[in-house]
Every structure is written in C-alpha cells, then in structure tokens.
Length: 340
Image 1 (cartoon, helix red, strand yellow):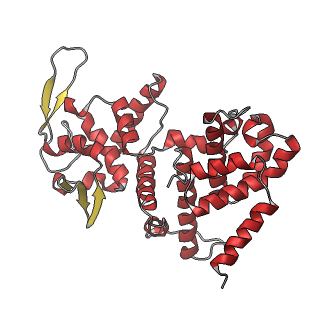
Image 2: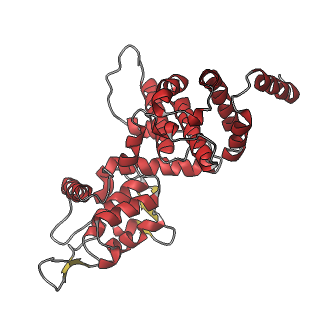
C-alpha cells in the first residue's frame, strides 16, 4: 500500500518534471476553477500535455487563434468521451478566465474551437426547470389565462418529471399531491417542480378552460370533458399524437418568428429531466449511475445480439454508458461540468 507521503512526493516530482507553460497563470486559474482534487489533477494533466505546443508557438494557449488551435485541441482531447468532455470544459473555462482577467493577448480562439456537435445539445435539451418554463412561456400565454394550453404545459412537465409518454393519459387528478409536490403513479413518486405548479393546479382544479378568439374581443369559457384524467380537454380526450402535432406546430412558428431556437420533444424533455435529477444528486455528493435507468429501458425488449454483444447484460451496460456520455455532453453544453 502506498502511503500518503509517498503519493504527495510523487505528485511534486510530476509537477517539477513537466512544468506548465505560463505556470503561474494556470495555477491561479486552477485555484479559482475548482476545489476538487480530481479536477485539479485533470487540469494539471491537460496543461502539461499542452506545454510542448505552447513552447513551440511561444504563446499561451489562451492567446492562440481558432485556426491554429483546431488540430492541437483535437489531438489533445481525442480520448474516451468522458475525458474529452472534461478537457473541453477546462479549456473553455480557462479561456473565459483569461479574458475576464484581461490577460494580454487573450482571445476567444478556444471558445470557437469545434466541439464536435456538442453545441447541438443546447437546442435539443434544457438545463433546468426554469429553462423549460421559459420555453413554455415563449410558446403559450401565461397559466393565469386558464386556457387549454395548460394541458400542453403539463404534457412536458410530466415528461420532465420522468413519466413515460405511454403513461401520461393514465395520470389522474387524484395522483397529484400538491402538499408534497409529487405525482404518485403506479407505486412510484415523480417530482412536481415549483415552476410546474400553476399548470398542474389548473389541470387539476379547473372545470372550464378559457377560449381566446383573436377575432372577437370577448373570450368565453368552455366546459372540460367530465372525468378525473389530468389532461382532459373541452372537446374530448386528448391523444398523444394530436398533442405532439400541436406542440410541434407552435414550436415551429416560434422558431420562425425568432423567439426560440429550441427543438424539444417529449423524449428530449424526459432526458433533460433525468439528467437534471442526476446532477442534483451529483452535487450532493452521491455518485451518478445510469445502470438502473438502463435496466428499466431494456425492460422486456428483444434485441438481436451479435457476436460482440452476447448477452442482455452487455446490452444494458452499453445503454448505461450511452446515458453517461450524453450526460457529460449535457453538463458541458450548459457549463455545469465540474462546478462543484
């Protein structure tokens, strides 16, 4: 067993042997960027790897333009996805730090480096409940107007809570627990985020929805279909396909108007909610694992297993790894990586 003193000594040796370019600046950045030992070690490894390129160019990485940086960054970060995201995140934060500290010659070259499609995450997922609420506010009038659009708001809030799309029409008003902000369905509890409460209250409590006719000054209220289903409307029971089409149509209109660039769907909102809850656990010190989610995803599905994937167990591990990689991309896209 290696004792703490020996480990400490070896780290000192490592730093002396591989001196970083512009070391004082980078050490100040590391101190400001993170308190985690593992993240500090990742920073040291990355900056030490960059040292030879910086010395050849006689310039700090924060002062180099995008065109020159592209091949350097691609070579440095071309490892397994999880570590690639970590390194890209460090470089992005280092660039912002140097610019904010007004380091001579600091530019946005690192910020412009191609991130291999990671920016697409920003238009297909949301970072937190407030971002989803802002998107819904862009699509629809406020909840206080008490229109049928509260149903579409709840459609996405059910997704964000983690309820599968096939189950949403089975959610009853009596499944909604406002006191504990939970949806209690099929023996499981799903969260109701504070931003979602107004829409849920309307769908649970209102017996009528307002009908706003842009051609007339006076609005009118229409009775909802009798029953206990949460997403019931005024003309009949909602169906998933119709709701998808309606949401897609309104979303496209807002995109064309330049009011949003988000392209959400039930599954993308569901995945955003899953990642947000994992992130909440992670910042609380609880290790993140997607194995249970992968097991649930596999369920009773039938897979054609090739010679490289000889068991459902292997398939489940593969799905868990895919979740993990997408989670790392989500954190990077929304600047949440190693912020704790």
